[in-house]
Length: 137
Image (cartoon, rainbow, N blue to C red; front, side, top):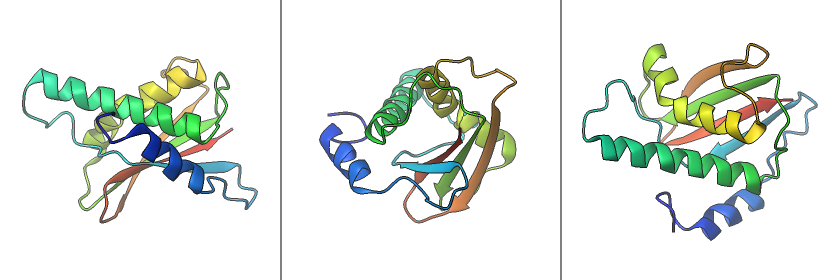
């Protein structure tokens, strides 16, 4: 069991969904059931932050694998969208998405500061907190 729930449940949920848009846009969305918090403003013990970062990285890796996205292929652009009931300002949004960005870069086999990849952050209102990853290959 992972910090986000049973592994088999996440895998079953992701395989049941069709992750391709089919509109020829070249962007493929993937929704990961994690909560993105404002890391710069988060208070508490360092152990809680480390556990949260580990859970986010684990969830992104599981979702990436379940969607059968390619590993070792550098994308042109990555958009990380935070879905939550409240919005964050732009610096807290980018800070909260850092673990997800690191995980995607690790899965694709490049450094996350590579200028060849465009990182875009966004947020939308939703009742259930989650994260949507859109990759343009």
